[in-house]
Amino acid sequence: MSSPTKRLRPEAKSTSPTGDVYMASPAKKTRQLESYGFRTVGVPDGDIKKEEDIGEIGEKERTKGIQKATDKQDGIAHLVLRHGFNQETYDDLSAITYEKTIRGLEHFHLDGRLMLKMKELPAYISGSFPLSITHPTVQANDLDLYVNRYKVDALVEFLVGEGYGTPSTLGKDKSGRSTTYKEDGGQASGEKTNCVLTMEHAKGGRINIVATEASPIQVIPLFHSTIVMNYITAHGFVMLYPKLTLRNIGMINHSGKLTSKLEDCIEKYRKRGFTLTRGYPSAVPKSHACGADKHCPQSIRDLQDREVMHIRFPPYTEVDAGEVRRKFDAHKCVWQLANGTFCRRKTADRHGFSMVNNYVSLMIKGEGGKEEE
Image (cartoon, rainbow, N blue to C red; front, side, top):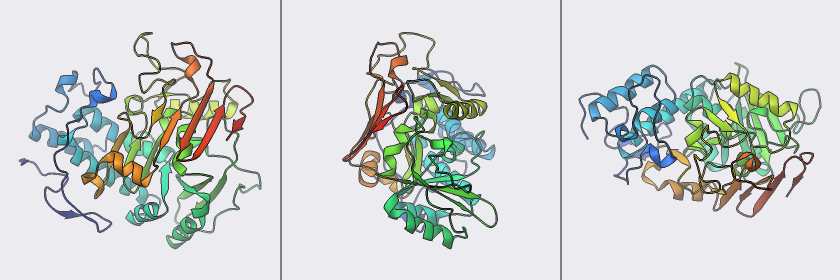
């Protein structure tokens, strides 16, 4: 599709920063933002108000708007809310998201080579960094990398080659105390101890490597809130609760009394402009069907369901998103949040769980933070 304005993504064959050759995506079934459950779209500038406007902006206006948004360094959330999530906007969103990711990695003295290493291991970026791509008000002070504990040595070796110093003792902080997940991506219970290495660059920049027992994907649905249930890896950017997160809204993944550590985590994201609630965030009691709405905490979710937002990076834009996640992330990944007791429909279920392939974690809330596997 031609345009009088300069395209942000090449129309024909091109080469990605990692040397991979890719083509513009073939036509796919149009997917509008309302597939995520939006009825109206609130845009800061007030340009688009009704869902029927989404995806119907002319090519010239749309490209100009995306260029303008990029010039202002708006986050991906703003671009998706403004322009929709469909075939006409996908190529631009893919290119811009990749560009913003690489630009963000440069603050940690890294580049596209990290993408190749994450594909090889595999490894995943989670915590604040993905939010800094979608929400420019979030600043990632460090980079959280999640990897299986058997692949830690390979990741450490790579980072040392990129100028990072020898990591601190596995599983201990500088004072010698045992460490747990970082608060940016910590589990809701805050109880399970996992190996964490901290590496610092001579020119500034800190990386935290979280070594997981199973697939790194398995811990993401156990994070303290849906706000941080996002990850970046070699094939793209994945957000598990886009309907809420893109609108600066999240649910607290806990059914019992909040610990002081968890309260500190929640408060930090509230200060960043996010609204966090215990149940389904709506002022209308009958705004959704409990257990059926995929963003309801009582619903059992799947990494392959349609509510997952996946912005694929080149050269994966030509491959079905579900197949990419199945091949590189997990053959099967299902989870349920732990805050279902705060929703409209009564339930005695105070537990959350996450299962990836043949590994399951059951998070028991409100009972001393006990964990069973």
